[in-house]
Image 1: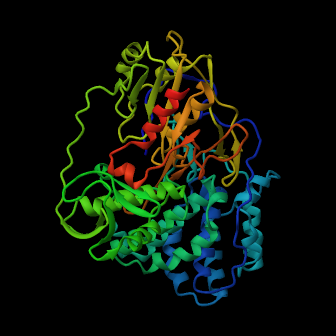
Image 2: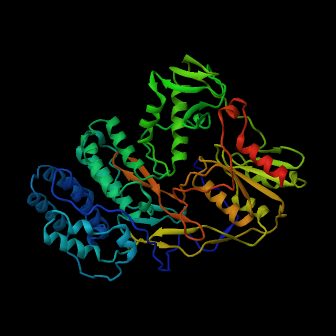
Image 3: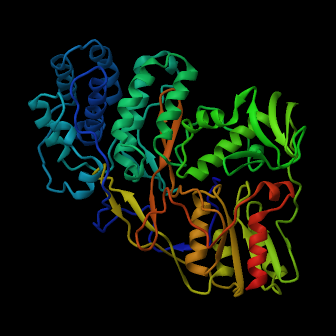
Length: 551
């Protein structure tokens, strides 16, 4: 569940926008493909890698003196017609020549982080000739003048990484253009290769993904096949932030109305012709498991549970928002149901907090606003405990700092360990100095039990809240593991005025173990059953109430 950052009354001691002064490099071993014998696939893979290395490291290109997109676009036809390694080498030499001459200012700062993230073994074991290999190795050892023309820079307002000077070609029909489809692939693949801090966590090597993606992009001669090729590419990141903005996403109303229970697709609500506890077996005579498998390869997620959550949302869209035929199992009977689109009314909740019992208060953080926080804590001043819910869909548009002011019993709030790209050496990553925040003064500390409810939909900034309240305020987390997609989102502009994204920062526990692809494991886990769904129970909230009543 993505949520925009809200204004905060916290003061950051170590700003994310400042250049990292410490030099503790982030090192995690990645898988690489080193062998590139010449064939119809590797000629494109090597072209992509050479173009990307020069884009970020060749001094003239990195200074913006060469239109590097144009160089690639002009060369693609010639490379397409090259049938021998000698012919491809000749075209790549022309690319090197077009980059221009430069001063050789070799640096010794080729560190372990670079070796782990952009290992140059592909130069030594490819069909490239020795002169190109030697020149590329020399270029890779050069320092990059910050800010690089095509690299990332830190936005002074949002403090997020922003790609620089990427053309969008909004008047080009991208699916109809072989050259611009390959430009989109090469641009995104290299941005991930040099700036994504979690390549070491991918299910398969990003190098292997490149070779598998080339011909789907070359052959994607219409919009549908182009979208499928890009969805599969983004899904290979295993990153819940790997969005692309030119495909159809499920509507917000499709969230949390389908559940995956022990491998079965279960309806959670009474709506239209469907009832709570119905098991969906097929849609339009297509087996539901086949549908889920076909969706799985197109959906990027950091954890399996978050991927299943997103699949549930797409399945919900198919059965609740379109006229269709379903096979369902209800109370042991197999039924064939013809459904009509369902109109879901928006919630009319006027107050985000309420009593659960004499001792327990409840807060739906998704709709809480800043001006309600003071009143909320006054309302709960006599309570022994408060349950805060992070699972709901909503804007989460409240001042986090003011909330923390009431929950904090200390002046300084600790943040997770962070890793950022080294902008002077694309492909290297550095541990950031420990980031703390000063808590606001003037709030009456709520010094009783607090519980936060989480599940696999809790993502990004909401996961950060879950981490903060556990590690700073001794909150108890109850529910299911979170999404495992942390950090700010970096959006890469693509040809056709499209965009694709990834997680730009790395967040880690205080002992520097990963949070990405793992999520936050709750203190108490709770899972639904078909019977609990039929009975309309909220098993996570029920587990929280049981815990609080017994402690």
